[in-house]
Image (cartoon, rainbow, N blue to C red; front, side, top):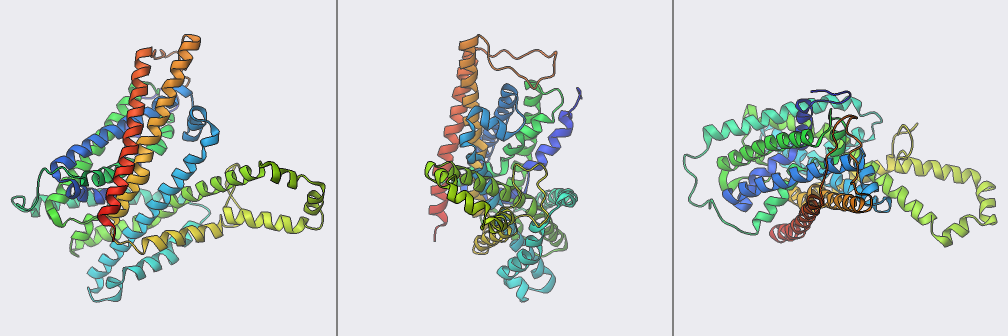
Length: 474
């Protein structure tokens, strides 16, 4: 299964599933409530196919363009001038994910204290207090930490807790679900609630940021092996999602909540699930936060570069008087301000080792953690936030951006074939392997497929966001 450097399909599939299956799974049962069970499961399968296709498209683009990172792929296909879109997407997606994390922490800690201390205890009645204490004394110090390597062990624990919760919900549904589905629950009802379910499902299937990295780690990375990898991973994810969504909905039917674990009472096995998930999410928070903060740093540096490129500002900064002030009497204060700016923004993305002598981006860390907390403390239904995250960012990452990249890659290949008689080469394939010949007709079909994925994502984003806001607006 190995050809030189790289890992086999069997080793990479669990890694991809670990990146994909996360806390968003707790909102899947409520998706069947919004869409009704039969249309909801059909939509879940459709989104799974579209997500798998768009994930495969990113790997195809990496083969065709001989790149190993999402940013390099974007720069080659769409140009570096629009690369800021990547950082905006990473920042917004990370920030919304962090909001969901704090809401889930509020859910799990409040329910845990209710079971441990009684329903009348202040910690069981005041979720805002729990979220505040956890944010100040746990999330903020972890976000300020220089070295996050030790948190890798907590991700293994989190995976174990998630597997435990999956089996817990499925087992409880088998034992305690009603013998027959209630007459008040429509099994097949097509409505605009489908778009809210689509948003939840897109959010659950997102793993596309890591597609270039996963592809680069694959041994003997042919299109066939890449197709096999994506097909197996997304098929397993669909089976897990469909089973969890159906059993969670079947257990509680119309009363299922946005976080299905909130429907349970404080039994011992449920307490273990609540405490385990709260612990796991708290220690996953800084990993996501670090990516969002780095995206904010990149955006700030890009903005500074754009401002410095303005003709008027360029003339002012290069004027003799300004240079004299900069290197003369204002030299020390300029250096102090530069150091303060470094402390505010965190390490430069261009630096080789992203390490500072001081804690990274202290002011930015305080600001971002506070903004995340300020939004999360006003929300109690993680299903609504997950739905908005899916409609706004999930569809963008899962469908819009991959479709756009694939469309432009196929168009570049077509133009290259017209001009030189051959398309872009698969430079990442090991030497000696046969190149894949792509015909003109295939490239036209590829462009159509890319545009279809792109437009589907746009429609789901616009309609889904409107439906969610109208449904939950108060």
